[in-house]
Structures are given as structure tokens and as C-alpha cells.
Amino acid sequence: MICILLVAGHGTLLESHIKSDQSGLYSFLEDVPKALLPGVGGKKILDYWWKAVNTRQIFSEVYLVTNADKYKHYERWATANDFPVDNIINDGTTTYDTRLGAVADLELAISSKKLNDDIMVIAADMLCADQNFDMAQMIKFFRLKGGELAIYYEMEEGESVSSRGIVEVCPESHRITRFFEKPQHGETSSRMASVVFYCFQRQTLLTLETFLSNFPKTEDRVLGRYMEWLINSAAVPVYGMKLPTGFQLIGQVGLPDYTKWLAHYSAVKSQPRVKAITCRAYARIGIIGNPSDGYYGKTISMTISNFWAEVTISESKKLVLVPHPLNDPTEFGSLLDLHYISRKEGYLGGLRLLQATCKKFYQYCSEKGIALSKQNFTLKYNVNIPRQVGLAGSSAIVSATLKCLMKFYNLKDDDLPKSFQPNFILDVEKEELFITAGLQDRVVQVYEGLIFMDFSRSIMEEQGYGNYIPMDGSCTPPFWLAYLRDPSDSGVIHNNVRQRWLNGDPEVIEAMTIFAELTDKAKLAIEEKNWKELGELMNRNLSLRRSIFTDACLGPGNLRMIEIAQQHGCPVKLPGSGGAVIGFCVDPQKMVELKKSYQEAGFVFCPVVPYCPKNAGQNTGAPVSKS
Image 1 (cartoon, rainbow, N blue to C red):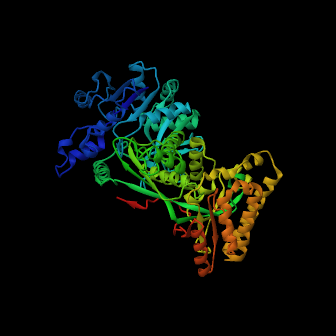
Image 2 (image 1 turned 60 degrees about the vertical axis):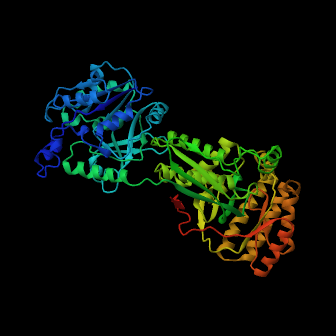
Image 3 (image 1 turned 120 degrees about the vertical axis):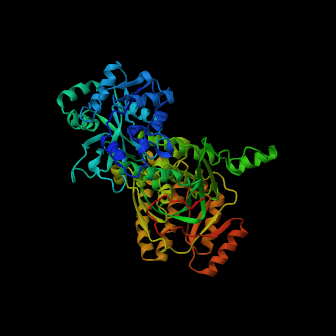
């Protein structure tokens, strides 16, 4: 691919403001072209663009198109910055009135240099908050889509859409459906602005001559008007890729614009960068309905603050994933020590979850047209969720990692919609790590609090995700949790039920239908604080589960925990895939006796502390701490 940097504009307004400025502060900038004005950090604006595209692995050649009036300035810049002077193209114009227009300048570069390749074209006199672009990711997306590519960004509050080319982008295909060159009020509700930052296929560049013949007036020969014609009239497929940053100093601007945005971006850059962002995701308990979430069922689950996974991300020179000293051991005291840890903890800790999430995150952004900045980071995690007892420890690590990545790269819920975040987390586990799972855990860890989830087939097939309804987390009975000290792999509890369901086994299909009915009734019982009804529904949930999974599958540990609860008259059920049980007890004295029975039997017992933040259901991804 070839890159063409356009700097042939005549900055009449800006130059006149500099010359007429009475303060004398800007006299040293008289006659300096806009692209060579100081940018953020004192470097020239063009310096940053040259650094971004000076990559032989991506661009075979980089050309600079300027005008006769400023040619000498760019020639001097080229010799000082190792830019080939022969690659500077002079369009021969000396005034704003004699300008060719950006489209004609682009066509001049192609024809004069006899270029026959795909081209990236950039207006290299734009000021940008962050020019640490991943050009390779952009080119990959361009090749993937097989059409033209336009980079766009979300305008900041206060910016007028009438000053930019505004695009409407299909969220599924990422094709730009409409392009408005400086639209008037009411023409479009979009605030996605396209700037001169495009990729063109070689065959599409043949349309430049057609456009120039159809639009002889110089004021129409701007690339925004060309894109508008290409998309709206010629119906050429053009795709959009979003950059999480802003662009300024576009077109004719004055000294106030330059000083305003230079100060703004300099202030942003000078602010102390947050060294670390820490995000937390909580363990969850399935109160009713599970395990029907993977079978088009309904469930109610709640996050609990007793246990959590915490992930910390910080910028670094290289991308580093830090092993957890306990969960990812690489050193052992002896062969016996290795044998014991491997038998008890397994072979795989949380490091694979971090790596799989990062891999999937980059893949998602590449496929969805989100251009990430070239920032490396160090990622580490901590977790106190007991392993293999069905409290969603793995998904908590993935959930916390996703929150960190989104904040680090400044992605919003519009970029990865909240309703799809559980699907993303599930895909990390299922597609990357082959973990058998459903959506329930991921939904409640994304939305947080007490959540009613409807995964009905019609809903899932229509929108790709379920209906998720936050409930009042303060309206719950005093739940308790008991779990095995030394559990086996809890995943064994799924047995062959999944295959029976896929084969159309009437018993399993009926059971999943009943699970959903129990969930609807439990929702009403919770809202009415009818704890007797809720307890009976939980017991029925357990009985139904035992009937289809069999007691042999549940194993002696789970059965013993169930038996203890029943002996004390407490409703009881499995909160996840096995290894733990939950129930509730409204009598404090009975809770004390229950705790003693579990502990004497060798189990861990704890009262449940719900995690139901005030903004439950509004996943801001806000970090729990910063340093």
C-alpha cells in the first residue's frame, strides 16, 4: 500500500491572524504552513503523522503533496526528518484562489507518480489528541472488508456537525450507509465525523477523473464531497472504522482555533496518566432456574461481595501478563508438592483467561471496526473465589479483564454494547478455552445485583441475547452458602444432559420448561417477600435437577450438604454447577446451628453478603480503585 499525505492547503485565515496578532507571541510562526506548526509536546503536527506512517512493512512509499508557495518549507522539513525529497509533489499553486482542491491534488499524485496500488490518504495538517495509531489493524480491516475505508470518530460535546463530514454507519456490516458533507441542522442525528483519513482500492481511484469532470468548481473538489458522491450517488461500498480519539484544525481555521485546541490536547497529554486501573467482578449465586440458562430457560441470580476477582491494568513498554503466585505456579518445593497442587488445583490457572480475553478483545475490535491505539500494558489478577464450586470464578476473571481493557482503550458501551458483553465473555470461555458454560453467570457479572434473565428461544433468536431485568437486591432473604473444602471438577455435574436435550429427550425438555416456570413464580415471590413460597420453589428446583442429573452425578459431597440443610428445615439448592449449596434462614438462632453443623461436617459455611450497587443494571465498568 502507498500513503499520500496532503498538505497543499493555503492557510489564508490562520496566516492572516498570525500576522495581525498584536501580542507578538506568534510572530515566529509567520508564513509557516499549518502542518509545520507546533503540535502537542512541541513537535510539528506533520512530525506525528510521519512517525505514524513511516513503516516499510505497511507502506511501500509515502508521498507528500504540497503547493508551490510552501514547497521550500516542506523541502527543509524533509531533509531534517529523513523524508525522501523526491516524494514531495508540488501542485504549482500559490494562493487560496488558485488551489486545485484535495481531490485534484490526490489525482495529481497518482498520475504524476504513475501509482498503481491501494492508497491511504491523510490530511496531515490535522491536530489529533492521540496519533499512536495501529496502522496494521486499519489495513487488516480494509483488506477484510474488501471495500473503501473511512476513519471516523465521535464528536466531542459542543462541536458542530456542520463543520465536518458526518457518516451513518450500519452497526452490523460497518458499511457507511450515508455521508453528509457539512450537513445542515436536522439532516442527520449522527455525530460520527469522518475526516480525510481514507483507504482506497486501486480500481476505485479511477473514479477520481469522473468526479473531477462532474464537479468543475474548485470548492466542490474536496475529499468530503468526493466521499459523499462515492457513497450516496455511485453506491460504492465504503466501510467505517472508529477511532477513539478526536481531530481538529480541519480546513480553514483561525488562530483562536489553533491556540484553543493546542492548549486542550496539551493539557490532556500533560495530565498524569493513571498508572493502574483496577476492576472487579463478583462471584454469583444462582437462586432459581439454573441450570436452564443454556437451554432457552429463565434464571434469577445475584452477585455476592463475599468473593470476587480483581484485575489491574497499567501501561508498559511491552505487553505483560503476570502469573498469579498461587493460581499459576511455575516453581514447586518438590515433586510431591507439584503432585499435590496439580491434583488439588488442576493444571490451568487464571493466566490463560487473561490471555484468551486479550486475544478475543483484539479480534472483536478488528472485526467491529474499532481502531485501538498502540499501547502496551501489564495485566495482573487476584481472585478469592473458591475454585470448582460453581461460583463463576473463571467468568469473573474474564469479566474483570474485559472491564479493564475497555477502560484502558477508552471504549464505551456503544462500542461493545452491554447486552452483548455477556456473549463476549461466554465466547472467550467456550471458543478459546472449551469451557462448558451458559450465559447466566456472565449476565449477572456484567449487570451486577439481583437479575432476572429470560433466555427464551424466540428472544435469543430474534436479538442474540436474552431479556435482563434488574430486581431490588434489598428484597432478598438472608441467604447462606456452604461449599466443599476440596472439590473435584464441578463441570462433571452436567453429565450427558446437554446431549439428551439436543437429541430432543422429552424428560429434559420438560424439565427446562418447568425450571422457567419456577423462575417466573420465584420473581413474584421475591417481589412480594413471600419467603415460604420462595423456599418451596427452590426445593422444587433442586428435586427437578436431581431427577434429570441423578444423585450419582451429584456425588456424595453435594448430597451431604443438601442433607444437612434439609435436616435443619432450610430450603436448599445448588447455586451453580456443583460443589456448593445455598439456602436461606430467617431465624438467626437456626443460622448459628446450621453453621455449626456444616463446619463439624468439614464444609465451609458463610452468610451471603449481596453485592447490589446503587447503579446495578448500569454497567459503567468503573474501576473499584486507582493508583
